[in-house]
Length: 390
Image: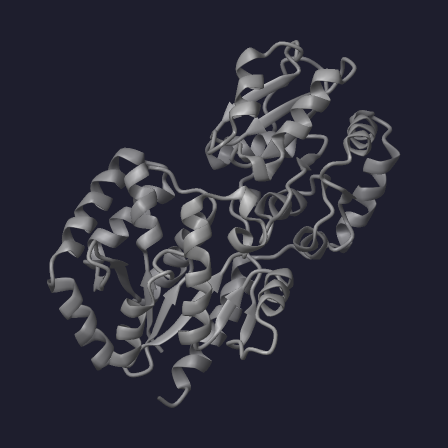
């Protein structure tokens, strides 16, 4: 069994100096498979895949793990330069020939819209195992970009045509895929829920500037995450709880950003913390009365997994993926039910909150997903695919 792990998404993250969202999943895979001697690869500017120099790839991974954006950009630039030539392509071809049954693993959506380069690796003898995070550009195109809307159907077609197996992080994603392609043969799907990273950081909550309770919402500020609901609630909220927004500003979030920039009507009750490192995020989340997660659609729901793993209550949207992940523990509300969210927030803000106490009583019955469990499943899938006859 030999894994060829695509790092195309991490190369882009390194060039930006930020690893977030799906980048973090690819980073977890790199961290796991690196000690096993996997081969790292990336997609060249010309479309073909090439083997990355191992020390260069490990340096990029290390820079991203320690949040060193300057270093990450240097290593990503060097990796792009290495991929521009044909040496890496030839090395990857020889690697596949020398390791029968090797598995080409793509755990981001990077490159999946181009079937030909992946088909070329399969023709050389590699197996193909992708990870499908979600179908949002197809099922909810209003929450994504035109480029993603154009590319995602092509990604799905590549998976259906070429994959020897398919990793999914929620049954909801698998069900959505099946519903979109009734009657079509799908690759074998394997459920492997993501572990969490910040939940392992034992950082105490920061000292509060006052005695008021606070809530945290975690994620990029974009329309899909529904920050506007919370901001409008806080504009009319009676004095009391604070809202801390963790996450960078994203695309098409002008209305939310204008509200944050004006700051009128909030009277110090809303704090935009921006993108924080894992330690500061963990500390703020640990001290919150609850995570607020009014998202419209998710493939998995990493913020919810992080909060529940840390024992922090959550008020979240009543959508299939979060219902599945939360397993009856959080308080679930429709994402547009403003009065319901207001009532739940004010209840959880009380020191004697019955709803919060009830959720804490349910918490011990929740099973926290772990990376060790995730990779035990993945390695079993990889071994099975590697053992298949060509």
